[in-house]
Image (cartoon, rainbow, N blue to C red):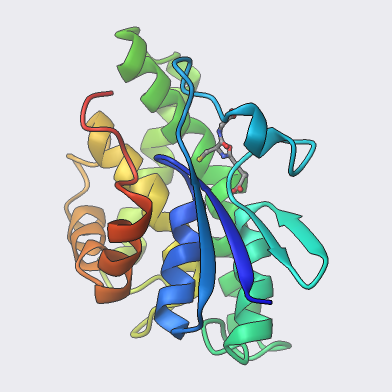
Length: 206
Ligand SMILES: N[C@@H](CCC(=O)N[C@@H](CS)C(=O)NCC(=O)O)C(=O)O
């Protein structure tokens, strides 16, 4: 049985598909459209109580939360090569980025998405958080090609979706080094292959 990836349109599932394309392991991709209200359909909600994308199924395991899924796929299908050696400081730093994407960076980027979509102003608190996060990311990326240095890791794969969203809302425009990094990521051949199967990360019109 091959790994099954449940992928909602315009969703974080592209992270998982990108990693699987990097590895070159076969997978069964099931795609779902969003509802009128930009939500997941009931069929996807039936798979996992949170009703979010991505969800994978593998050997009886049903797993949600993209960072957990990336770690699982990396450990089980890639011999761990998309993360630094466990037990090292680099591994801990990589965890900081991988968990920080959803834990610290996503909130204000998503706030910019919903503000742009509804034509509303962003809350001042979220605007400040976005600016602080982006300035930090920009400073880090002014000295590195990828978050951990010279090679692609799970952390970069995790960040790409958020950067696609931030670019769409205009939030990346002031951050030249983040933009250069994002454009570099968006040219990765395995990401291109993933997007050809999942469809784009963001809708054409918000
Ligand atoms: N932190 C979760 C977030 C999952 C999530 O919010 N997924 C969105 C798509 S990117 C979703 O399923 N939205 C549909 C809905 O909430 O109905 C992860 O990284 O997997």
